[in-house]
Length: 176
Image (tube, rainbow, N blue to C red; front, side):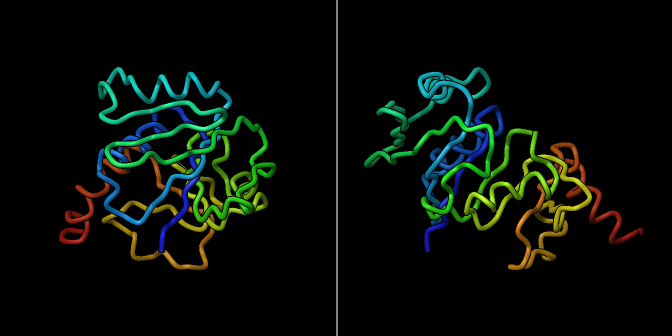
């Protein structure tokens, strides 16, 4: 079963997600089907092709109307690009989006991120610390075992927490 993913916010985190997906040779059954970002599609294509930290994208990125055609070998994947301020207005249901990766830094509470659910997405992962109302804050390798199918909006914590928690967990488990 292919998991259909949309990226909301195509800044540093959103672009790195797309890049990791294609540089990882798409090892998982994941398909990025949409990007929502207020920047022009041509600018998003350029920023994908040329990254100041990671260098040139190893594949190809071509603009076709309001979509990016992205490939790293093989046929290109068509990724629809939107420029919608209100996530509830995005056609996630029509596109059969399973998971929205919320990378804007704006929709960090369950209440705000749930706009994606109203747009038809099934789940939302916030790429920043979430509000107290999110279903869970997850750091993979530390507490990912608490995830359940019933959870619809989760936070991936902060970059600092993701760096520190996996190192501290074994100490906490042994020493307390």
